[in-house]
Figure 1: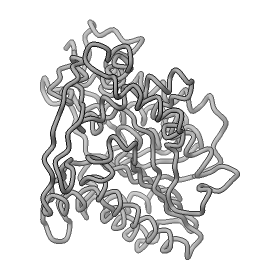
Figure 2 (figure 1 turned 90 degrees about the horizontal axis):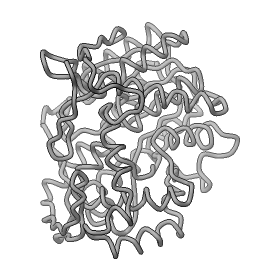
Figure 3 (figure 1 turned 60 degrees about the horizontal axis):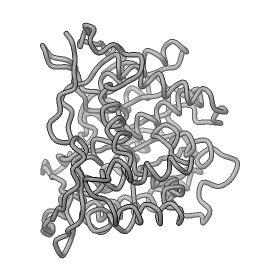
Figure 4 (figure 1 turned 45 degrees about the horizontal axis):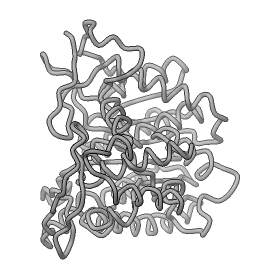
Length: 396
């Protein structure tokens, strides 16, 4: 079949297998062109099929020669429906890793469940003995608690009062005003339950109890802080409350793992185009302006470049991971530079539909969005027939 992008709001409902494979190849080549990362050896990535989790798996495997297990909740192709982008990404990753003789396994299912944790632990025992790096990069709108059975849903809302600001439809380039009503206390509670640190902590506890977490192991979860203009709906909103919980979890896990020489961090990453960020009002317009400024200054990083720097400079570099000895790694340091933020905010105050292509990187945003699903990728013939049924041979 001929596969073309089909969008619904901030979601692309199709994905292109060859396009996704090209994107994976491009990320791998970037990592291989850089200096080798000194460690780790066996890596578990929870939330491994897209975005920062996928980049982490690529950096570990092709930068450090690590064996990897990726946990993710993606679907294969069915009839005329394509597989999800994460499925195609993972299949392409496994093919490349296997060619280099690296062990690579995928566990497909609900990372929040006890069953997937147990299956992962059994696979580690059989194939790796233990893991020395655990990346937690789960992005999900819902979570069913494995003990109580309660299902929680997250929301993206301010707290206390309604929030109004500019936003952008990145498909059309239309800049408009938006107002988001404040969250209820129950919505805050549920968002923390989905996006906070409880499940991360459960994973580390289960891995430790099973004896498959190596002495001196490192674990990292990903977060975002961002500029003041997004704080009301992000850092000071429902997501921010969840991220505060994540950061408190890192402190607890750092103490827990520290007894055996281990470490726990939250890495605060740069704003990038992801399916999740595309869903947050205000954020696509901010990212578009940020891209424009950082590209002009020559300091723009895409996902794999950011994660490679995290691994090579902070987690496994010669110096300490953080300058102040905390559990918070600020790999968003280039985004939050004073000169960058000043220029972005100067543009923000002027942005409107008529000048959005001039003051912001609208085309770059669109390209990155469609790249997530394997479209608008150089070297792919999108008019050619493509088989959507791609096997994931090392999956459980």
